Length: 82
Image (cartoon, rainbow, N blue to C red):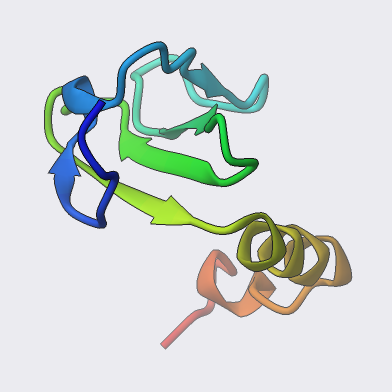
């Protein structure tokens, strides 16, 4: 397998099992994640499954998930956002 880099085609990640949140909306506007063999996580847009993937380390993804749980990004989805 070639080296994984940000922006590589998601289809180039061999063996990836893509998953999306149970909270994803029915129209398919969501992101999908795949656990990588090195413990990292790949992220892609579900509407463009062959499009680019972003690759994050385990620590980067853990920090993001904890920030989401803590509400650090709530302002991005609030109805009254600027």
